[in-house]
Image (cartoon, rainbow, N blue to C red; front, top):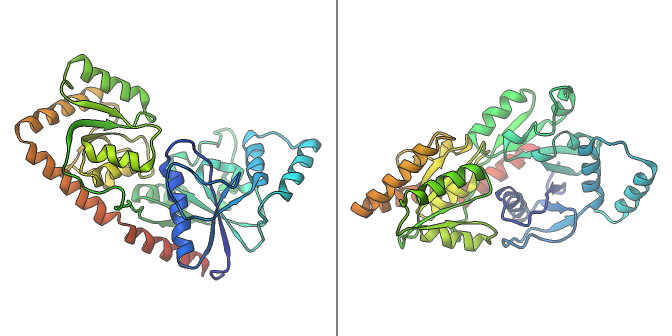
Length: 343
């Protein structure tokens, strides 16, 4: 197979910022730029509005409806089959020589959709791999029908190689967009965080800080429902970013915060172990709320006494992230991976 092969990246729509969706778009952009026929495949032919992308969009309401039916486990009635045939006429035609790339979130439904078309998994969070599986049903044969998996961290690669010893696992480095997420030393006494994941832990940490009046004179900023550029601006202003990574394949927000020069404190979430390093961040054992809060207080106190030392840590973190997870490295990894896949 050559670059003439059409590659469709099946992609859910999100109203809020999602690192997983952003990386699907990013991979399509890189492949398109380098002469591949790659497309984002949505249910409807509309782009995400919370970030800018040049990726070409195709649509298949038929495929997404099929996924929904297979995920529900319900049998297709005659009337539903009629509706599906109508939807198919409105959808992108997927040929037998094309490739469908699925995120891991669709689980075992992936194996039932377009059975004659080659499928690849773009697994951005290995800990979601078996979310639609059951301990009472053997899904081994279906899982092993996927020969190729692309993933985004060493932790995920190790997990998937162990779980799927017969599959070919490719690891790509994600790229942090330095045009948007870049170092700033113009820091305010501001602590930012994202509230969606592990919201119970977020609530405890923030309210303990307030209860003890530890955050007096500091701004606590929740980053939610913001565009990519708005997120970056808040991170550039923030001295500290709180990581609530939870069993992440990689965990983009803390890495993006580090790129902006934040001192990141919090959970590594498995995938984050490769970048949340003790030299320039403060890893906390997941669920250790008191240790989390105490160390935020210590960091704020140290900044009052010796602000330069904290700013230097932020610069070290930014340099490490922007060098290791550069757009150049990401593009090289993606092209190398797809050259192997299409040989």
